[in-house]
Image 1: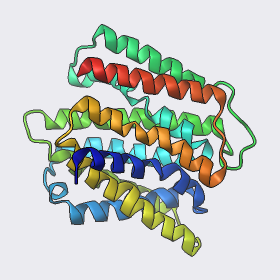
Image 2 (image 1 turned 60 degrees about the vertical axis):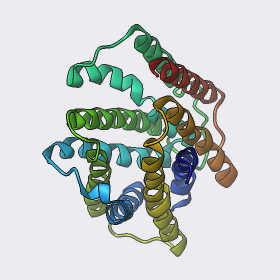
Image 3 (image 1 turned 60 degrees about the horizontal axis):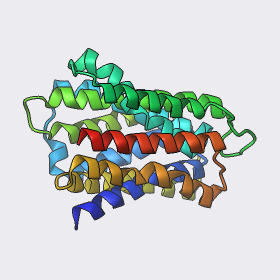
Length: 277
């Protein structure tokens, strides 16, 4: 498979998460736990690289990733898909704060400009929040959880960078598998009693096998052969398509301010990735 097509398919599969999560009547703990249990099993079974790179340094980033997965599912249950995905996409702004502290990475002037643009876009999601949507029963709380999921994702990235220094990158997939396993272990005890329909469990299987598992398989194949800027540009299909699927499936509306904030995040991310490349 051409690597760019693999990346595009990964982004498309990732982007279906919001609509699928909202279609499930199971609560957030049940959805997060079952999805991650299936995803961890699929990745561990199908990707040999996921069975390598296991060391104690994997645990910290995996815990951060588990927090990201759990917060993101909770956010999707409470706010719009657009808000959840784009607020998580502000992770690079958090990373500019974390990098110098944990990784001793220098912050450049363009990084500060990028962080300011992301922060401005982030703030717009909390302005003029559309109320009264059945698919977004508590948008302010959902937005806050989505913002925290962005912080957790930034900690995950920082942990991957830290543990990969001086080694190969096989540990990144181990972090993904362990993070999903930890999510399942932490969420499932709070998931009972569990009563859902056959459709609920079918969607959960889709999320675990395809939206996470198969998407990461495509991602790992594509990233090996495509440069960083082009990869980041292709993967922006995920936040762009995420609210589209939710609008098609659920009729969910995205607020005007959120659309402006999303545009700022996309444009500034492309600009920063191009300058960094």
